[in-house]
Amino acid sequence: MADAAAALPPRFGQDLRHIAALAWPVFVGQIAVLSFATMDTLLLARHDARDLAALAVGSAAYVSVFIGLMGVVIAVGPIVGRLFGARRLAEAGEQLQQAFWLALALAVPGCLLLAFPQPFLAVAQATPEVAQRVRGYMAAVAFALPAALVFAAFRGFNTAVSRPKAVMALQVGGLFLKLPLSWLLVFGAPRLGLEPLGVTGCGIATAVVMWAQALAAWTLLRRDPFYVPFKLRRVCAPRWASIRDMLKLGVPMGLSIVVEVTGFTFMAIFIARLGTLPVAGHQIAANLAGLLYMLPLAIGNACGTLVAQRIGAGDPAGACRLGWRGVQLGLAAALLFGLALFLGRHAVLGLYTHEAGVAAAALPLLSWLALYHVGDAVQAVVAAVLRAWHVTTLPMFIYALAVWVLGLGGGYLLAFDMVHAGEVWRGARGFWAAAAVGLMSAALALAGLLARVNRKTKSVKRNA
Image (cartoon, rainbow, N blue to C red; front, side, top):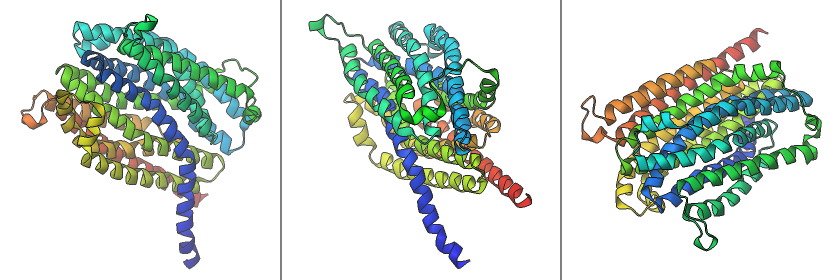
């Protein structure tokens, strides 16, 4: 017993090192991706408040479509992770090619939804000037969608085979291309005869970068010796059995993500009814929420990968242990960053805007964002671990109740004073308060589900 107790601290430290080794490239890469939106927000905040409002509506619509479809495509990750853990590399490579076919098929309805954005505009009740800008932005990102979904499959595969640095390099490269291109298109270049395009310029820059990343990913798969054992140079035709397996796992994953993201999306759309300043303030808080989310997302991806690999290698005890290590790490980081945001919220706002009205609209939201982030971080890590166990259906219902009913529904009642809760809960603050409660509830329910999965796994092992 003494020897076992002495061995526990090194095992904990070793687990954290394994998680960190996979998490930091994912974190850097995702920060680069989110910097696309951050960059657009900063540029448009200095260009025109109407463009910023259009970005809030247009990006919310794009994210709802893209994230939902991406959730289906990245089912390739848990599947490939198990195959990689079992050293079935050729099968893992074939699964990636089927994910590419699935991504292209899903892009068709996705592009149609983005190219005809009238339903989103109707819900947002956008003014004619804002609606015109939203249409230009969404037409551009509709062209970006197929490339973005293909790259999502590439990202899920590389994370699953413990090679996230390849994805990180392409994402950081995309950021360096996005920065000058967005600046040029947003503000224009009169000497070059290029008129300012505002938010539409942001969409065009995103489309160019997405296609550049997809082409670079395809070139890397074909030429890098690392991928030779996966037999990717031989193009496989679509195979229904493989695609069906991804759909069986990915559809609940995608719907779970859709529930979570649409809760956030419709919050932005409903806040747009309150006017330009409230939605501009919400856009800043939403962008910060996305930035903070990148660390637990990275931890979750790393843990999900390691858990899937351990399952594939026939080590369920190791899979259970690694899953809980990730949850502990994600919670600790969320508490730290949430507190830092709350204490430094005035300074953070100064980085985003110098307009007093926008800052005043955003400031009360950041206090709720600190609590929101804790729930968001824990649920992100737990959900990723559950996906590695191929547990995806029950989490979908948990998200629906927590995000749509508690978060969005409760926020609507508070924000529009339908329950007469008082002035302090009205407007965007009501939505953010309810969203924080919803995500905290989701985190607790999902953690309970993971504990149940682990108990069941250990029971099966004892009885074997």
